[in-house]
Length: 67
Image (tube, rainbow, N blue to C red; front, side):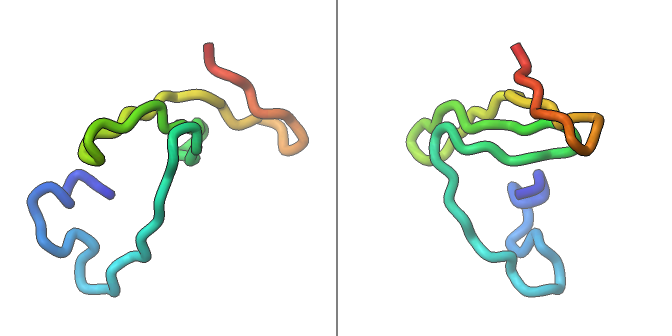
């Protein structure tokens, strides 16, 4: 969710509410050119994501692990 979700009741605006989903520790999601993986969850309120992989610059390239 965007940061606006912290202060607005319907942060998605005038359209339909986006569908919900779950993510478990170790699952990753892409944002721009980086995959962020869920590292830990505390009391179902705080989650820590770590930049773990970079997308390849070449269409046939492999993901690059971020140290």
